[in-house]
Length: 284
Image: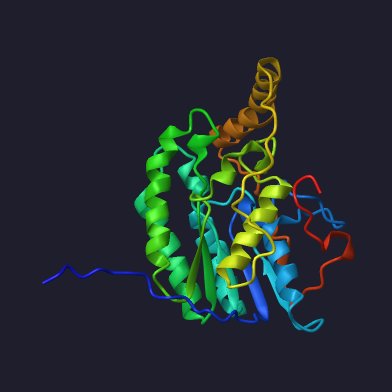
């Protein structure tokens, strides 16, 4: 007898016209280091997704909430954001978390997976379509990040396992080599640049069955690599401006998100401002 093979169930081929969307997570979902909006918040890939989904419906018929707060660990996301997110009973929820835990020494990967899995299950129980993410591969762009790879690979496998559920879509950022390009990252090298947010948004929309506006996995136009002096200066500035303060917060038990409310705590009608409705490509 031939060995049986197991494949993921086919996802729906007809896009759902979502009427409501809740974003749950940390700085990745809050939109850190994207363009600033008129109200002082970062735009972020989740706002970009909301804008595209809102455009599919008549005005005032699409509602959006973003509960994400920078610096949150997966336990905080589970304890602080899950209950309000499930209570909103949105049609669509994006869930990203756990990487802040992985960045810390001696992370408990079993606990991270347990909390992420429980969160995804609770959100699916409301009837929502849930979108999950794999991390990018930091070893291809950041020296000294090899210690993170075993946990990131395990998390990637776990997220794909959760994606066997027909109601869970996975955006596989690890498999997109374009994220090796530092131009998709902000100066702190941890958060996405505006171009990075634009591409993640397109990846989410693709996972939801929307026709591609562009190839979000495509490499950026070639650019001359920085000279040695320029690179050394950039590395020194990064250590001084970003790594030092990050280590200081870890040593004192503080977080960049302490006391910060979500940028959009209620599920309310969403109409993107004309000043940031478009999504220009890199160099556009």
